Image (tube, rainbow, N blue to C red; front, side, top):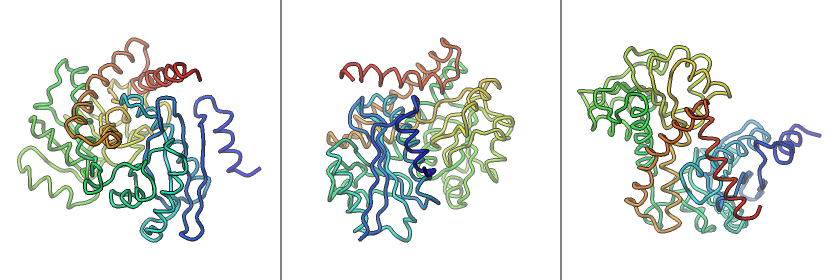
Length: 364
């Protein structure tokens, strides 16, 4: 039995924690498409999650990523209060060299073949223009351009949701949701991060930023000559004296065995996915008295937006839903305190409870 067989079959059929409903392997030789569509749960409704286009080293790595991401979407959608389960797709290959219209159309046909069990959207390596192409073959496509009936860029509401999670974290820590006068470090000021900085500055927070792209940092320094400063890199940011809140908004794994011991902030609340490098980091944070706002809870503004496309996109309706991230985050902190567990574990328990109740209602 191969490594792929061992990993995929065990995860699908034998793991109580990560068992998935369905995995579809897709191939179209003519266009060069190789893709994996993973559906973790449809207890709450059709699985919703983006399409990642990435040059995986092996097919086994691609399958593992699809499975992990799909499970994460089940929890994110459950905590966002959406009537959607979790799914994710990955297309194997370098999008800069193999992405073509023909390939995207072929991918759209595979998604359509699931008959609405999976609703796709953008992720790493795919963009609004790509979803417009996929949608030509598949009506279960979100993240499209406004010209094609979609909502366009979801970073605005993603940032707004993180901001609400940050306010809830401040309320829990200091008894006041206001961020005025707080010092917030933002690592990664791209599409989401720069919108988050705008919210923070509008409320009067002092912001320290870093990004591997100098132009992204320069844009904010020019726009906010007062109140925004920059440091060389993330290593410098997490050690910044007087930091109240740390917001990882770039790569995953930001909270690890090396970063947690030197963090100066009292709160971690950011937009990046999969911030905890491994199980146990959440306890390390708690042991140091650092409050962690679970990433998949506070960064759910984007998925709230793409889900709304299915009902005819309305920005104000989405913004109202995203504002509830404040209450959801506070509820997680309360559950964590009640159960004596870290917030990440509390969020998982609440999400699992919602999925279990939905499954029981359906008689599963």
